Length: 315
Ligand code: RIB
Ligand code: CA
Image 1 (spheres, rainbow, N blue to C red):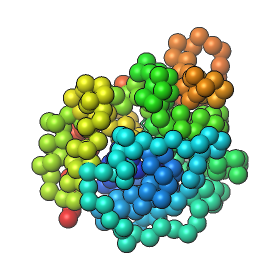
Image 2: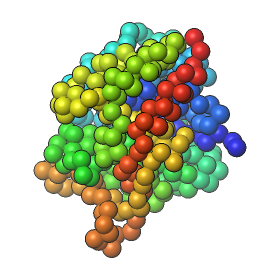
Image 3: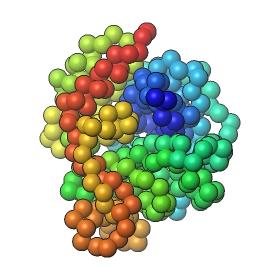
Image 4: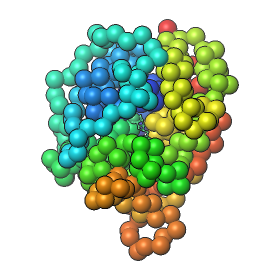
């Protein structure tokens, strides 16, 4: 079976970086057409540098990294250094990688790639604010027909918000962009906090990755050791939720996840609930179903998949 064509849109971020490594570990399953960076966890100059650094660590000089939008569509940028550290992927040695940044703007790359692609042939995998994706859809609405699906990390229902009481970070940072994406008419697979909070990077799970002997695994452990400090203190949990790798894990092993067809609407008016994802899980409205809400996962199998794929890196 041919590898699935994907574009990773991200704001690395330790969890974005581990998702990128997971995608890079599986070239027979995922053909990465490009990696597009967006401002989010940290400003754009750092997210694009981090994406290039992960390409270096994963020894994938073939992959193209593009810098996208520096600011959300309408709102001022909100970042999360308090979670991810000043560099965004703190926990590993940070250096300026030789891996080049493409000159083309990420939004233009997305438009150009989808404009040339066959109908329904490209899966978008956004794990940060949806600014780049929304900008591309605004610039060239016809590109939507080339999107197979949008498998995104974002939103929250029963879990409540992680940066306001009612909003998850990726949606909160650019709610206008999220509304454009959720209303675009293409299949949306939304992996929100309800599922990501079930995949906790406990010490036993991290130690199984620590036992691997390659740069990618070592970087993953270093990032997790740093990433774990904030959420374990905040939630009193035994490890941090590995949010973004749920997207590529879903693509590689959808059978590990449980989902429900719903309407998901994004709050863009109320400051109190800005960025809230109203997931109509019980169909209490007659709104059209625009997404699959992924709400459960086999966490042990998830970490087994991640560990097995990280073991594939050599060197
Ligand atoms: O709320 C978690 C999400 O926000 C993750 O994608 C994390 O990387 C941050 O972008
Ligand atoms: Ca992210």
